[in-house]
Picture (tube, rainbow, N blue to C red):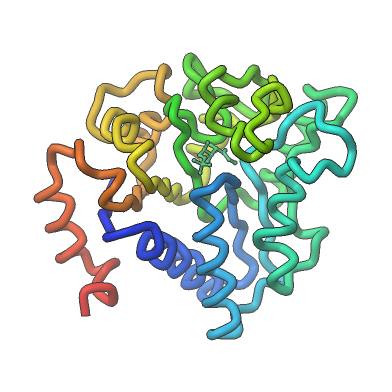
Length: 263
Ligand code: F6R
């Protein structure tokens, strides 16, 4: 894992969007793994901005989202499909049929999970997977005790996750679904690159545990230590408890991957 600390959430979003944009330029038919949540809103704003400024071609890329709620009414504005359409897909020229999310309204959730895994496989696997981190340490909706070999499946959301996400349901925790379909930790680890994005003081404690603490299925983000190419991009507000900050900063200053950001 590499870890980069940027000044604020805007700088985090700019770096993350730049990595996605560079991949798209190098491989217009790449497969992107996407996430939802408040952290990603700024990332998608930055990606849309770069897309316009640099005439990025999204027409041939395909996207797979991490997760979707189960049990929302059809067409719900709270679905992750609605989120993705609002925050990204309606703002770039991507054919909607190239954008995939698990279907949380499927009658047979196990069959839907298997279909989703198969679709990722048939697309050739995910080139770059964006993940946020929840206050429970989840990536995707892989709550505590998720096996590191888990695949796409339905799962019960942790009470802490439902509290965290209630703000997106007008503060009404009872409106937050209790279950979701999520890529598994094992699914995420198969992406060729995983980029974890964390901003804000609310993430400071869990980020330090995820990055510098022991590897444990109680915090699914710690599984990223098993990935050969994972990168965490975090802001100062999320970084105060990191013990090896001096090293992380020296990586950012010297690693050729970040040379253009130090110019
Ligand atoms: C979203 C997802 C979650 C979020 C995480 C952080 O698709 O899978 O893991 O990335 O809960 O959410 P925010 O950014 O709202 O703090």
